[in-house]
Image 1 (cartoon, helix red, strand yellow):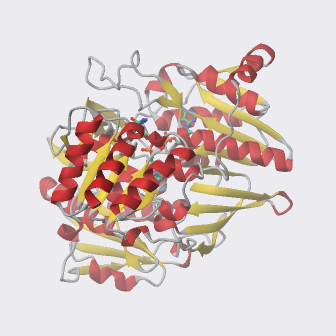
Image 2 (cartoon, each protein chain N blue to C red; image 1 turned 45 degrees about the vertical axis):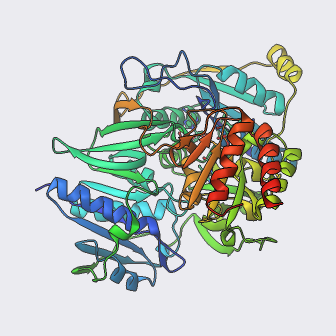
Length: 262
Length: 325
Ligand SMILES: Cc1cc2nc3c(=O)[nH]c(=O)nc-3n(C[C@H](O)[C@H](O)[C@H](O)COP(=O)(O)OP(=O)(O)OC[C@H]3O[C@@H](n4cnc5c(N)ncnc54)[C@H](O)[C@@H]3O)c2cc1C
Ligand SMILES: Nc1ncnc2c1ncn2[C@@H]1O[C@H](COP(=O)(O)O)[C@@H](O)[C@H]1O
C-alpha cells in the first residue's frame, strides 16, 4: 500500500484567539498552531495500515508555523517521507487554490505516485470555503468519502471497505475503488503517543523535503472573502456563577434544588 | 430576475431530516430579501412521496435515480450540478450533516462556484448574499461574501427553527426531472450498521452528567459517575472521551452521537463545539463548567462557572448527597 496523508495546522482553540487589527482574520502572532485533530487520526490510521500491509507512508503539508514539529512527529511515529510545500501567496487564497496546488504537487514528479490511498482529516475547524479532500479527489479524478472510522483495503481487488458515521451512532459500510481519497474522522484506535526524545532523534536523523510550489495556471481562484470577524455576541450567554468553587457549587446545588433536580 | 434559492432536501432512511426544514426556513428568508423564490431539490430513489412534506418551498424539483439511493457526494454533486446548470439558482443550501457533508464542496467545484461552510445565517446585503459562518469550534464568527456566483452554502444546524420550515400544505409545484448519471460508480453502498444497544439509553434520561476532554483522564470518569449517582442521572460524553475509549460509543452526544433533551445537562470540561452542541442544545437546563471563560459552551448554557472541573465535581457531589440526605 502506498499511503499519503495530508496534514494541516490550525489555531489551537484551547488558547485565546485574537482578531487581527484589520478585523478580517486572526492575529497569527497570538495564535498557537497545532495539528488539526482529525489529521492525527488520519495519520494513525495510515500508520496502522502500513504496519499491517507494508508499503510506504508519506505525509504532505503546506508550510505554516509549527508545521516542522508536526512533520517530524509523523516521521518519528513511522512515516517514511515528510514533504512541505512553500505555498507563498497561494496560502492566503483559500482552500480551492491550495487544493489545486497540492493536487499538482501530488501529480508532478515528487515520487508520490502511484498512491493507493490519500488520507485527510474529515473537516478542520477553520474550513471556511470547502473541504480539501473532495477538492483533491476532484482534481485527481479519484473517488472520495469522509467521516470515516474504518478503512480495510483489499489490494488484490483494488478496493477498500470503509465505514462512515451517520447520525445517532449508525454507521454505513461502503466499498470504494482504489486509489481513493478518504477523510478520516477517528482512527480505529486512539492516536499513538511518541516521546519527545524520539521526535528530537527524528530531527537529527531525518529530513523534511521542501517542495517549491508549482505555478497555478489561473493564479489561484479565490471563492470566499472574509469581510469581518468577531467573537460571538454576548447575547444569550450563560449567567456566570462567580466565587470560590465551594461557593459556586453550593449556589448551583441551590439552583438545582429549586427546580427539583436534586 | 435574481436566481432562486435552492435547498438540497436531505432525507435519510425514509425521513426528511430536521435540518432540511431549518434550511427551507432560512432559504425562504433569503429568497424574500432577494426577491426570488425558495425551491427544494429532492434527490433519491423511491422517495418521491417525501415532496409532500416540502410545502415551505415554492416548488420541488424531484429526481429519482438508482444511483441516488444513498448520498455519495460525487453522485449527488453531479446531479445537482446538472440541474443547476439548467436553472441557474443564486444559491444552493446544503446541510453540513453526516449524511450530506462533501456534496456542497464538490458541487461548487463542478460549477466553479463559491463555497462557504459552517453557515449559521445568510443575509442579502446590497443585493449580494452574505454568509455568517462560525469557525474555530464556535469561538469566532465571520461575515463572508462569495467571490463567484452561484454560492453553495453549507448550513449547520440551528440556523432557523425547523417548525418555521414545515408546512401543512404540499408544495404548489412538483417537477419531476431527470439527470444523466453513469451506471458504474467507484463508491458502492453496502449496508447500515446499527449501533450496539448500550446498557443505558442516554436519550431517555432526565439528568445527564456529560464529560469532555477537560476531564483529563479515564480515572477521573469515576468522579462524574459519583455525581451522576447522587443526582439520579447517567454519565455521557463528547467525542474525544469516546474516541479515547473512556466511555462506550452509546454515550456519545452530538452530530455522530445521540440527540438528547434531558431536564438537566451538566457539561463538564466540554468546549461547546457546534458538533457537540447540536446533540444537546434542546436540554431544558444546561450548566457548564469550564476553565476557559471564552469557551463557546457558555453561549448555549443557562448557568456557567469557570471552576476547575476536578475541583468542582467532588464538591457538587458532596452537596447533592447532603441535600438528598
Ligand atoms: C463530522 C464531525 C462529527 C462530529 N461528531 C461529534 C459528536 O457526535 N460529538 C462530539 O462531542 N463531537 C463531535 N465532533 C467533534 C467536535 O468538533 C469537537 O472536536 C468535540 O466536541 C470537542 O470535544 P471537547 O469539548 O470534549 O474537547 P475540547 O474542544 O478539547 O474542549 C475541552 C474543554 O475543556 C476545558 N477544560 C480543560 N481542562 C479543564 C478543567 N480542568 N476544568 C474545566 N474545564 C477544563 C477546556 O477549556 C476546553 O474548553 C465531530 C466533528 C466532526 C467534524
Ligand atoms: N492547507 C492544507 N495542507 C494540507 N492538508 C490540508 C490543508 N487543508 C486541508 N487539508 C486536509 O484536509 C482536511 C480537512 O480540512 P479542511 O478541508 O480545511 O476542512 C485536513 O484535516 C487535512 O487533512
